[in-house]
Each structure stands twice: as structure tokens, then as C-alpha cells.
Length: 129
Image 1 (spheres, helix red, strand yellow):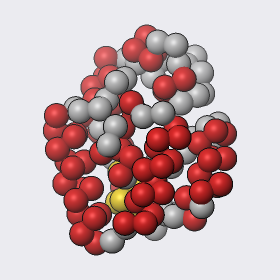
Image 2 (spheres, helix red, strand yellow; image 1 turned 180 degrees about the vertical axis):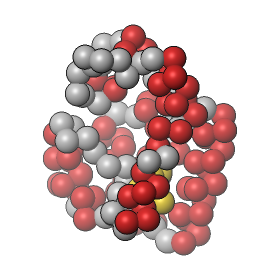
Image 3 (tube, one colour; image 1 turned 90 degrees about the vertical axis):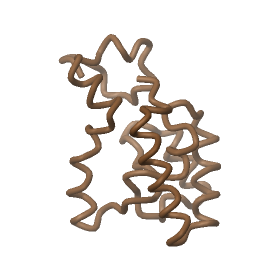
Image 4 (cartoon, one colour; image 1 turned 135 degrees about the horizontal axis):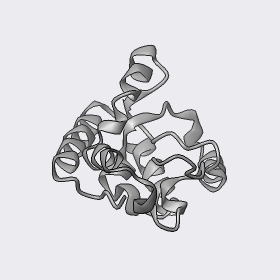
């Protein structure tokens, strides 16, 4: 991101492409910007699969997740909502998919999500900015 970019979720910016540097654009499209979260997984603060962590200022997402009990799950590097739309989903739909994940979670479902994530990353599918 360029210096002076507002501290808001990317989907809330009027023109997300205008604040990305060329390297930042590549990092976002390739999902390499997610690699530092591996440290959080090693520390036990995150899981490979679970609902994506909300930004501190995503009050609408946090409130809806709290209402549905999603905040009790360990956040993940990838999740069911990410393989079903990633940046393109409206917040209520993301939360609905997080609820669905809560009801279906298990080893084989997590493996399916990891596989689908790999395919999405390789194809840069679902990355709008």
C-alpha cells in the first residue's frame, strides 16, 4: 500500500488499485501477503482453516459474527468464505458461510478447504484488488 492509505478494509476504498504499489498488487494477487500469518499459526493464535480475522475497524463484520457466535472460533489463514468468493462476498454472506463452516468443521472438510484454497491461489481466482 502507498503511504497515506486510509486504515480501512480494502473493499471500503473507492479505488483499491490506486493505493496498491506494483509489488503490493503482485503480493495480493498471489496471496504472498498472507505468509506472515504462518507465524501466528505456529504461535497458536491462528489455525490453517477457520474464519478470516476481522480488521479492527470492521465493526459490521465483528457485530454480525458476535451475534452468530463465530468469534469463538480460532481465526484461520483460509476459510469456507474465502473459497466461496473471497473479496467478492458481502459481509452477511461471509458470515453465513462462517456459520456453515462452524456446523460442518472437521478434518476432511478442512482438507477440502485447503485444497480449494490452493486452487484459488494458483488461479488468482476471487481477487478483485
